[in-house]
Amino acid sequence: MNAEMSTIRHTAAPRRQHTLGQLAADGLHYLALILLALVMLIPFAWMLSTSLKPTEYILRATPQFIPDPLTLDSYTGLLDLMPVDRMFFNSTLVAVIGTAGQILVGAMAAYAFARLHWPGRDRVFALYLITMMVPRQVTLIPLFVLIRELGWVNSYQGLILPGLFGAFGVFLLRQSFLTLPRDLEEAAFIDGANHLTIFWRIVLPLSKPALATLAVLSFMEYWNAYLWPLFVARQDAFMTLPVGLAKLQGGPRALTQWNMVMAGAVITVLPILIVYLFAQKWFIRSVTLSGIKG
Image 1: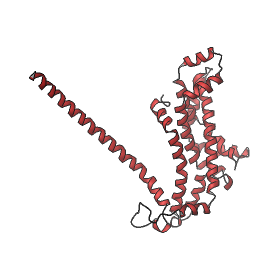
Image 2: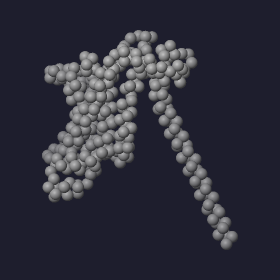
Image 3: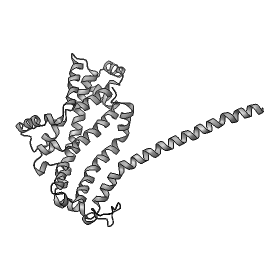
Image 4: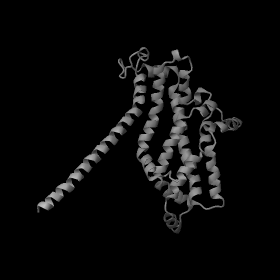
């Protein structure tokens, strides 16, 4: 009996040590993650703090993280200085319609590449992927000439349509569609379904994580776009937020009103944050389940 008790004590001690070591390792991991999160959040917190400060309190010798006094003058001054409401509407319209269009076009192309069999399919897909290696600056001038000849300068279609046909969205959704079992299609065909029914009622509902990921990335791309809207939207009626807010830093550095710049940055960041929070569950599922693996 004594021998058995001593054996139990000797085996329990390493287990306790192993448990304590594991807890310490987990604690260090969580501490590192918290520090990284703070490193990421501090610039955003400073941006919000600067947007709530009066002009004379921004470039003080001693930085002040919490605004004192706190004021919304930068936001009201920004609204008086330029048509932020119109630019916000333009950015929202372009981002929402462009995201929906990119998902629809990308999903249909991905279905053709993933679920249909036709001669030269894989070669065409490989050539399509090669376009991802071409810098956008290379195609900017030819694309602008085309848009100008179509009469789409200073128009919503000029802002939206060129971004609908990106290869990345097709690649992302194709990889997701390839993971779906063929048995579902065969059963649907036996029940009399056609490709359109299978695409709309089977493939798309089962690919929500990949669709949500593409929606977030597409919305961010359209919302943050600067170079293309700078070429196409030359009138205030079609100007988007990034282009309009860039005018705040157009003058000499000493005359830049940084509280207004930060107020515009806050207005620009909030919609992206809201979209990501709504799609966060599906976005993480897509990364972990791997709609983008090879």
